[in-house]
Image (cartoon, rainbow, N blue to C red; front, side):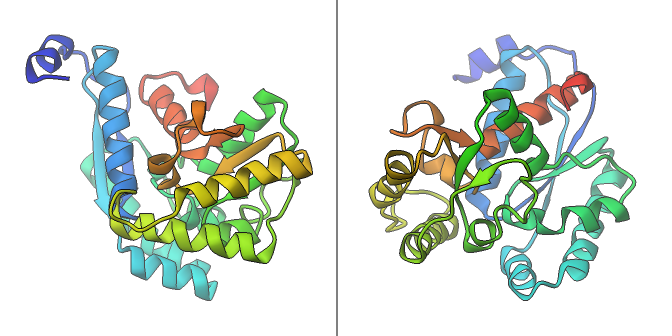
Amino acid sequence: MTDVDYEENLVAEKAYQAIGLIGGLGPGATIHYYERLAREFVARGVTPRLLISHADMKFVLARVGAGALDELADYFTEHVESLARAGADFVAIGSVTPHICAPQLSARISLPFLDLIDCTRSELSRRGARRIAILGTQFVMRSDMYGRLDGFEVIRLAAGALDLVHENYMKIAAAGAVEGSGADVERMRAVAQACVRDQGVEAVLLAGTELSLAFQEADCGFPALDCARAHLDAMIARALGDTATN
């Protein structure tokens, strides 16, 4: 989109609610969220109301690994409070792994929290998919998305495949892009395809925001559900005042 196109599409109307996004986990994921939000709002002729608070990825992953969920929730609460003071109407975290502390965080904050895992569950139900596999960090995969996908049959990856996905995912997260990261996207694709072919998986969850940089949901070679896309759709709907879908 050129500057002229942007100016022609942008009008005085502003989004109904302001989005507070906790980003930085990692930067490539935050850029993905921002670009998608900006593009979708401009396409609707609406000026987005978006605030971003940058979290420390190393700090967050260390607390996730240690299982320090209260400390992690306290850390995110500080970000939410900053976003609230700046005018956010609701908040979201632009990453899957930190949702390990979503229950603790929700209990600490006054702003509505748009939970990516809730959005994923709703999309799976809409599709009628029950047998699923998960690609993401080791924390997300080993825990079946923290045990919050009740009612779905989760097919776990073998240890070697799980390690392969995690290591390549973290390469993309560290680089903020696929190009130059050294990640082997094709080997991750082969893992997903094997789940579908050999174990009857109906949907493979792209349960790591940076996987949106590696795979396009519509044509990645396996039936995928991009959790970040489902999350973003819900964020856009809420910001536009369509709370019935959230």
